[in-house]
Image (cartoon, rainbow, N blue to C red; front, side):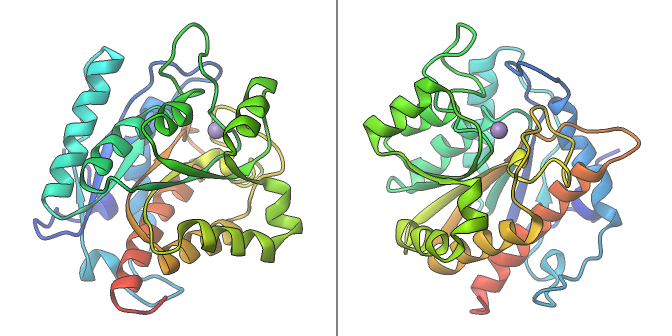
Length: 289
Ligand SMILES: [Mn+2]
């Protein structure tokens, strides 16, 4: 049976494309994220279809088109290429692509595809980790290096929610002036943080990459590396809404969910985030932000 977002039939005019990426090649600690796309989709029909902030119905007024949850090629480079092509197809059909991962490496495919249409693309990177290593466990393309590979494509990145860093990464962010908003700043310097985000993204085309571990693991425990001190739901939505207001998001991904069978809290949160993306795209179109 075909699994779709919210359990609704796919609408060919839908404005949002959901691209499942059961992608897990380089996960280093707790595995399971390849199961996330299907589990995130499975819990989605349990949500209300009406958004409680804007009273909009994104499924009806914008539409979600769920791509089939297919296996990707067994080789990392080929899997990334296949994914990149799927994202490009979605863009060509004028849909806002959202990859549902899978490990964070999928962002490389998403960004490459979106950047072919929008060369000046900037990246909003929600994460507990910087993912800026040059190499990890002997490879250059993996979940711990993905943001460095994206930066090498010439994409400006703002990393938000960071609360874990290696000495190599510290050196790198100093040398490259990489923009970081630490998790503690979201709690203690809120106004400054919102101003920095506004200035960084103002009027830009933006790809939003959201590692679910940006949220506090007390709230979203289903992830491979549960770092304490993360963002809460409303912090996250406030930032996301602000970026939709001041800039023009054109694609994104939600990655690193590790399903907990029998207790699908994090899957449900990820599913609701997909719904919020749809809502904010629609709210922006209607001039409501
Ligand atoms: Mn992370």
